[in-house]
Length: 456
Image 1 (tube, rainbow, N blue to C red):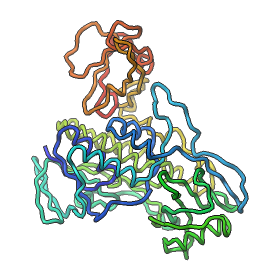
Image 2: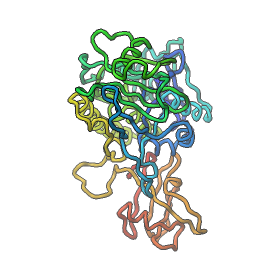
Image 3: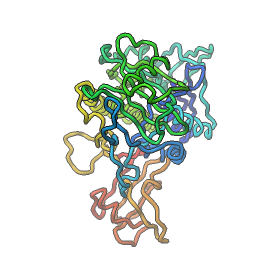
Image 4: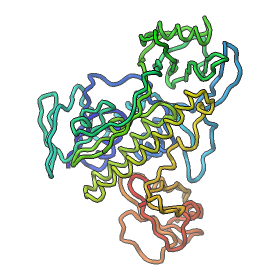
């Protein structure tokens, strides 16, 4: 099997790694002539950290990133408060990574590229897909390099302006609000303590201000600043003027602006995520406002969902990609839109990240199924003790491209190639009363854990 992926952002890279570790031939192309260098999607949600652990990149992500900073709030130049977008939580046996983690997108992509290279696959820059056709058995793609190749599947992870989506004729339904504009980017801000984040605004309009969040691995901040009708140039001079206006002259001297863009609220969802042997994922299928930090994370989960299904190849399995991921994208877009509206309305709760932004509550089950644990729910972690007394985790046994059969106090042998036998109080390969509790399991129960960590 061969899969061509257009777009080497976090979504395309995650999918390429998941396919490559299964021994599937994959090519990953990107029309850009050089790698993106900027923070953009810098918030990694807890579920994404679990995915990254499975893919073998979590240690690097944790080493290079940082926790959510304490944000100092200044109104009319006067310090008034400090808060976090979310208070840190302690890890639990079922949720080992309960907190969001901050890492600039370009750094995340570099970590993923390095892991992909371990499988002998490298991103092909300056290579765009310029056309494709498909039949029942394959996809024939034309590349900007002049090459024509035949593959089993094509995946468009090529962003909000996706060529693949447009060629498929899939409607991208939603809105772009031209009345709201913000200047986003990365810049060093001398005069500010890099251990903290900052919010500068006017006392009579506290929700309309400048946010500056420290980026790991240097002295830069990611900033977001509202633009008026006349502020159109995404330059350091424009940003310095905005900082002087909201924070006060001389509070911060800006330098080293390495990335900037003018952002407008753009909320869209593709009507379909698949046509035949061609799929779309990530921003090609859904674009989010930055509120709640959902966009990059949703794309990573698209890829994690799709990888094992492409490897499986059965139509009944492939058909579930659109059903599961489009339903989830629609739900997540609602969360992001709600937070965005709170910003517009001046609701200070918009500065806080709620439980529903962690993406630990994703469910693919039928909504009529109200059991505590049912097909489609995320499989929780649990501590185990093996027959020799060694401590291990369920996530350690789930890790890899395989599915897993959990058996609770079994009395018969299993022929499943990846079986985990569990007991409450010993007498089996693994002892874990916590696993029984987390899975609401009874003696004799069996549960299949899909390769993407959801209950089958």
